[in-house]
Length: 275
Image (cartoon, rainbow, N blue to C red; front, side):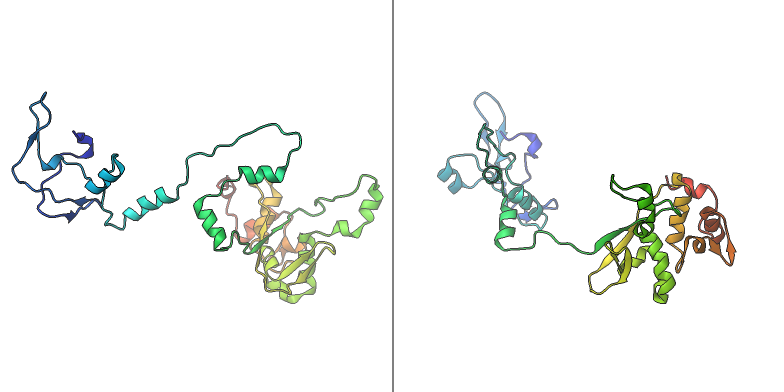
């Protein structure tokens, strides 16, 4: 007998109809006939208790086969999940081998599912790089990081002019010598200029490659560097650190004061909200 959790007994129906839950309501004739479930019970069953089956499939495969009609678009998701979910586990064998062949181990242990194999057969792209992201360094005046070799003396490090140049300092320099650069924010600079690491300079973009810039994240607990980052994200055309401190002809002593003067920071609660 089919359990009640499978929603049996079903209802009688003279024709097969599309149900509201994606499952069809199959034809079940109310012909008045019923049979005794077994000789030990007094339960009678009729067509409402008949499980869905296909007589030809049952005879051919000699096993239980549940047959359902997929007649709704919502059934596609159910079928897709079972077709493409792949096997539940992969069996591997690990054995000691003095002459280990890493390439052969990779080939033996590699598992390629059906969708991935199809993707490779049709030579579809496996990955795509779009919009290179340039991370822009940020630091306070004369507080940038400098890399040097262990055999170099302090005098040699300080006398090297390249150690005085950074992305940010050269951003200010480019604004001083190139009037067109004054229209871009620091984070917008990589879209129009290219950073040449070997020469430590910004140069105009010569290609059509799309690039975006992102300033390193700074926590509000970093103090002045946090407020400096706010200014760099809103102020265009700054030619020096001192220029960044100037607002309406007035030069402030801290980046926080400049930020408050512009109206980008109303009170200390604005910083607390960043946590």
